[in-house]
Length: 116
Length: 116
DNA sequence: CTTCTGTGCAACCCCACAGTTGCACAACGC
DNA sequence: GCGTTGTGCAACTGTGGGGTTGCACAGAAG
Image (cartoon, rainbow over all chains, first blue to last red; front, side, top):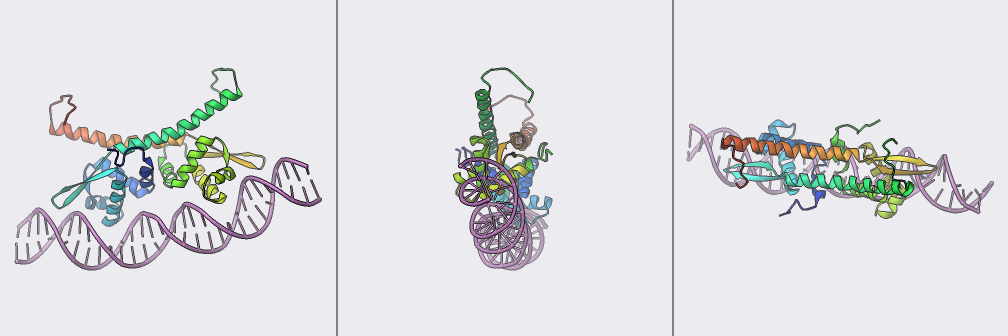
């Protein structure tokens, strides 16, 4: 496992860096398993562009192709999304921890204040 | 103000699309309020490159400059990160919801099963 | 078999952007 | 005052990649 979902949230953010790709991801998540041709009909880009985006998303482990006859339906793989969310929390958490540490250092009194 | 303080996780993903920028963000979160010059010393890029990244991150509301004399220290603003995490969960949640709906449609029995 | 629709591959264009360099200006130390 | 260090701005370059078009091939439909 973790072929694309084990800590390398980097790839996810790299894939999610493009607006069109985010839209494609959202469409896949919302419209269920869809083909590149179907998606191309819903976006102002060519089918090939959608195919490339799907490829990039698949590379990040966010979607997976499923062949049915001559059709290829892509479905979402939510695991990496969770991974990316964890990364975000990790960064924010590091900062929060640093702030708390800093405050404790400046103000030895453990007073529970809320105002800035 | 708060150009990124409410719901536009799009900008966050756009800003996090670059590896170096992610690294800069991580450094800001970890090393506390830092200047562009200090960061440039920790990265294999020029100070100007760091400045640009900091500008992009600030544009996404992820960091904020704080002038002290002739120095400008950037500190992290964690809120947008949480915003982005919410977006991720939203996408995954939509898919999960769709799956559940699909399963319910195929299998009218509301049995709480765990195996496929 | 013929036709039509969908996929895959390859070449190509072009623009946004990461990164650089150079210089001018502002603030601190002496 | 002078030197030093950090910041800001502007111009420039190069490449990565988003998007396109064209065509060849594979399944489905008739």
